[in-house]
Length: 200
Ligand code: GAR
Image (cartoon, rainbow, N blue to C red; front, side, top):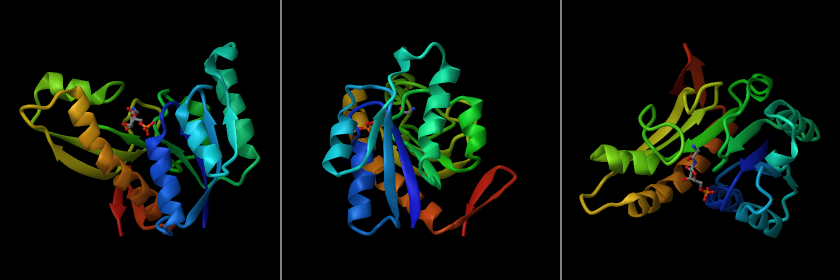
């Protein structure tokens, strides 16, 4: 059983997918805390409904990113966190947090990285005109969506797709991929060699 902390910023459908997977026994772990940088995130309601402790750390209330992240680390210290999951967390994590949890922070991103990092990945994919996009779960390093890739799922882009329809289709797979990656972590089912992830 691993102890999980989840960082969110928005509606929290990926958080919900983790909660559901835990309930169904598909993840051997427990969410100890959900932290949001956004007081209005719907994800907070989902967490409360599942009786998970929440902590709101409004980014704007801190003088700078360092102080804000110091606060994140302080809260995480209260729990023996094995894995920190970024589930729709829309900020780049600073070096202090990343260094504190080496290869223990994962992120879900709605593109086939390294294509289309950053915000609005699905819009970037539509604008570029790629025929295949998808989603990626990766370890978080200090770069922008640049850490070692754990799992990816390809999703075809249809000629009729716009940002919304593509996002919706990718999201369905995100909800499978993220719990799957968390369970791989819980079972220690991978090795990292030369910054690459090999699933055993
Ligand atoms: C998801 O599509 C996630 O992949 C994306 O934000 C959405 C959050 O949805 N994350 C990023 O773009 C991070 N760079 P959710 O709040 O419903 O899980």
